[in-house]
Image (cartoon, rainbow, N blue to C red; front, side):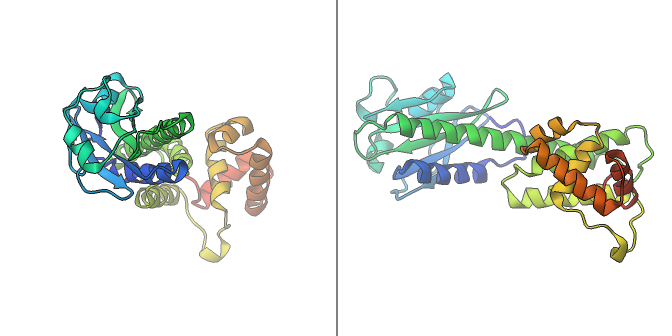
Length: 282
């Protein structure tokens, strides 16, 4: 179940299924969100299919996907309709689609089951450990994607309630923290619309806190240089910045040197102060 009722997980699920199909070579991958009643709503399908799966609602605990949701773990069958380990409420759908070997993996984010990913063969050959592992990894990657998107959405909602134009309020440091985290998180946001919105809000936050110079005099910092400076502004060490951005400490130092040179700054904190004065950081 998605605790954020306004969010739509279907685009991320579809992208995960497409990547999973490419990685495994499975002819059919499908899945969907888990609704408020813990039902699996099959909505996303990649690969040739008859249409029998689309729009099907699976009850909690029933069938392969319902069992995966109930047990919160992957479930695999080599021959769906003959398997003694699952209920057979949906055999007619499986037969209509001609499926035999199937794996279902739940997508769990902060202890909430958000969806289920399936991979299937139209033969009773075992799926094999490699394929099952790849499906599980796809679910884990989707969990991370959804967790990042949820955090970005939470931060944006907080900023929407905050007067970002008053940079002298005592909790402006919280805005700066949110700014740094949003810049970092945006690297992992797959949705291009949400990523663009995050970047636009970051630019707004940085602009309202300073007095930008004329365009011709404004230092041009690369996105990664700003990412690093935003973290420096929070007092992070190079090691902490490297771990958060997924780069090496030497790369962090390189970005800092480059940014400091452009800002004509003699220290990391002077670079932050100068960037704020130019309206490049909040």
